[in-house]
Length: 389
Image 1 (tube, rainbow, N blue to C red):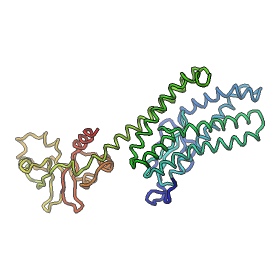
Image 2 (cartoon, helix red, strand yellow; image 1 turned 30 degrees about the horizontal axis):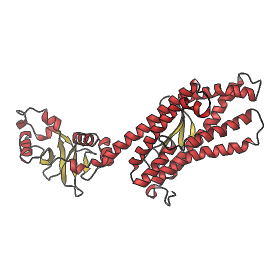
Image 3 (cartoon, one colour; image 1 turned 180 degrees about the horizontal axis):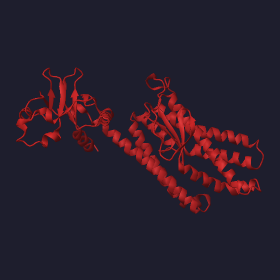
């Protein structure tokens, strides 16, 4: 799936705009141009790892006493160093392909890299996803090779634990279901086959939901399969991982379904016919002319015909009819500030982004030559979106 021109449209790598640090996180450095943040939950999992590892460390290196817990905490740091390499691989490849990358977050369940824009090609999605598991498998292979050279004891235990856990992380992340890296690879495959990124997200999301059920059921069936009776911790871990997988997969499905409806939003099709009137025309006369012309909106223009304001529907309806003959139409208009004039052909996600960037009740739609096409009312966009649900 190699791409002869790895960067979208041949652009240079894009730098992510600085984002505010998540409250409570600690910055421990940066790697691949991204800040590395540690959440408070990491200290909880590090303490848990130290507690679990302490008896094994004491058996491998007798006589350490309370230092066994310190060594266990050190193992947690080493282990998350490998997680950081996994996430850094995502960040490096994403930047190489031209995508902005935010912070790398280390948390209770591992790590996450904030690639701050959607992939433009299936190949990009695939390579950004696959390098993480490959990095984990590379660490596992290296640690496995070193394990033959290390003596028994604390170091040998650390090296063995490192290759075993990284092997598990690498293999499990290749399982095809969102939000795992394997899910993103499945998404890329479906996207490549169907030409629709959202279909890919939905398929991979459902695969992730199925996986979450398997994880939740695992403690109940592991005794029959492996002959090992589950402990309480097995159920707790299964619930945590199952909820994590379900929520991540569900979020991906919801987002994809929203994106599938976006192409239905075409500004030209949703526009209201508009009437252009002088700004000083009495409001009652402007309304009369609009009714006569069967126009659903009114725009005020200069003497030269240049649009300068949009009549606010809410302000118009709130104005008593007996006052309208004595009021200029401009008194219930909103000036055409930046962002309130949109091209008539704007649609889909671009339309939603434009509305989000400059929120307003109405927008003026213009043709490429600058002539007025109509007025787009935000409530009409919302109604069209809901109708397509």
